[in-house]
Length: 110
Length: 112
Image (cartoon, rainbow over all chains, first blue to last red; front, side):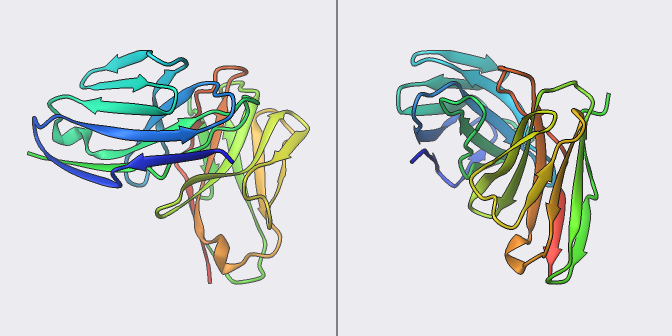
């Protein structure tokens, strides 16, 4: 059975304090792993797609990496506006279904 | 360019009532999806469609029906609402083969 586990559930950082979010997955025939950002009361917003182990993508203070079993979202020198829930979502072999983790709620204090 | 639009945004139902959630997208996407989001459980796929006139079951389809009569619209129906269907519902769409999902703002449904 396909599974996605994100940790930690919540993370509180001071502004400028770098950290990483973890996503562990078990998906048959992975066809892309996606990261989304979700603000309260809003729908998720696409951040990155990773397709193969060793791949990295960057956007401003965020960098996503992928191994065969895990993905990490590294946050460098975060700002309060980075506060949100970050969702990890691998896509299955069929290519139609994207499976979402429960998310990591990030709080960045000024 | 509105992207993905969901209506209504909020609804309160009594147990046993029926309702339909409407999703409309203006990006000419082939694929459309309905998810529900509950605290601590993440987004779970209810039904999806890979093209006009086609639908398929996702992870939690029981108690829901869908229809995709037009490419731009995807309807989610609850025939007899139950308290367990209290949730936030998200519609999403994606282009063929891209995988990137574009989400609506969500529809918050409460069943009393």
